[in-house]
Amino acid sequence: GLIITGVTKVENDIEVEEIGKIPIATLNKSRFIGAAAEMNDRIHSYGTKIFLQLRMGLGRVARPSELKVTPIAPSAVPNYWDPTVTCRELTTEEVETLVNKAGQAAKIAKEARFDGVEVHAVHEGYLLDQFTISMFNKRTDKYGGDLKDRLRFPTEIVSEIKKRTGSHFPVSLRYSMKSYIKDWREGALPDEQFEEKGRDIEEGLEAAKILEAAGYDSFDADAGSYEAWYWPHPPVYQDDGCYLQLAEKLKQEVNVPVMVAGKMGSPVLAERTLERGDAADMVALGRSLLTDPNWAKKIKFGESERIRPCIGCSQCQEIIHRGSPLSCAVNPSCGREREYDIRPAQEEKNIVIIGGGPAGMEAARVSKLRGHRVELYEKRGKLGGHMLEGCVPDFKEDIAELLEWYKVELDNLDVGINLNEKVTPELIKGIEPDVVFVATGSKPMFPKVPGIDKNKVVSAGDLLLNADRAGDSVAIIGGGTVGCEVALWLKQKGKDVTIIEMLDELMLADPPVPHPNRKMMLDLLDFYEVGVETDTRLSEVNDDGIVIFDESFQESHLPVDTVVISIGLKPKQDLYQKLKKAGESYSLYLIGDARGGKDIKDAVWDAYELARS
Image (tube, rainbow, N blue to C red):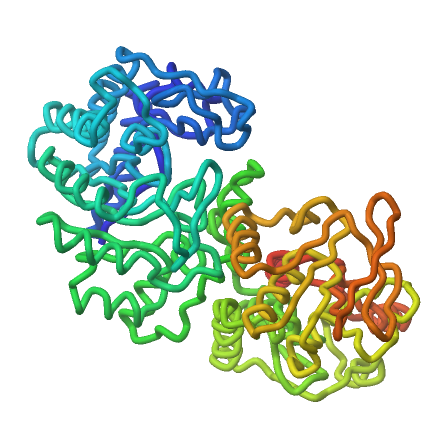
């Protein structure tokens, strides 16, 4: 196998960032080599190869607040995050310095016993990619002009690397076949008809042949840009294998190996791709290995059904952007495996778990792995909790796969599952447990307005499980993630849908929605022409529809058949309070939504933390 690291900067004098956030290969050569060589020797012991990914810079997509200088770019163009900031155009000498630094960094990588490097990147709209795209590159020196001149920066880089490391030292290129840019800060969705302002497929193929001729040994293929961030970082709403069609076109034009990523975590899809061989020579996995680092091992031993799936929530990115160490929403030990793994319990205990949602299932799984006796009670006839309604839309299939994984794991671990069982304090007392986890979940909140008890009013969760309750016209009260997903789902079913949101934008409530997911959902709502009323509140539900008022307290009437409430959830703690009041000798814990969690990450992390201790 091959490991490709995360980005390492080649310099920190031109695009100056705070030192320590990202490794800088050329900053302290001896220290970098000392640390990396030891790591690489250990990796090589397993017969695995490793490439160092070298980043030339962020350019216009750098957040101004995270730089100590004005953002840079090929030309004086607006910054992506703050268009009021104009990026500084790099001088010819600075570009030449970056080429030189790339060569230095690659030579250091070779001395540190890396097996090759990956140049980051003619993809996603980073600095190197910006030089290759005419929309961002208006230069009149040797690094601007026609396609060949715009490609001079990446071609000089590979030439410099080969000169310093030798012709046999592999240099791969992270490469976007297509940009999916409609305009400044506007991306394009799958199958959307639009005029490409970035790199189109025709230019992508022509550029690939020039780059191959320049000396690149392989292409790590993907698509997209910051304008369409849901392509290079595909969220739950993207299809599996979303780059395969583009990679197939690329493979037909080049004679070097092509690697492809893009939601390739399905073992069936990955194997089929390699067997066919028309789209890729290698399959690359990123987030799937955060979710389950034993992905390959489980396939090898015929346990594909036990691979924990990535759910495309993009929380791994959000965690990093908050300044925390890398981790995963559904694998809490990710990034801290040594200190946060599951260890056998010193004493076997009798553990009862009340509630079969994600928190309850995770608590049961971890407790059983530690060697405890575990019984899980669920009042409904199915496991899943809010996951049951969450996986109803076709675009939420990843949630259904996670739910199935939990069922398989609990079955393999022989956890006692008691369905259709309503728990009472008397039942718990009769069991005589040592530990009780209360994971009773949450229930929808409803606004206190006239008419809220009418039959036309339904919670988002109930509607997802009973789609026939939706009339032809629907108002969604609440524009958070759930409200927007329900709106899209209904619109795809042919309903006339309007979202009513009290804030000035959709999907802004806490916790923050990761950028790729939010941007794609907003673009999907716009593409499907879902009605949106922001800065607006519900005043009344009547027989004809709803009365709403805006920030100026101007009322208006919206005729709708169905009113869907999606303004949040409140914890269900009645049973917990009764058990607490009973004062029995067992340890009692409240976890997940019942404790006030806000998403699946909160539920899983809550349960993992308490069950492992």
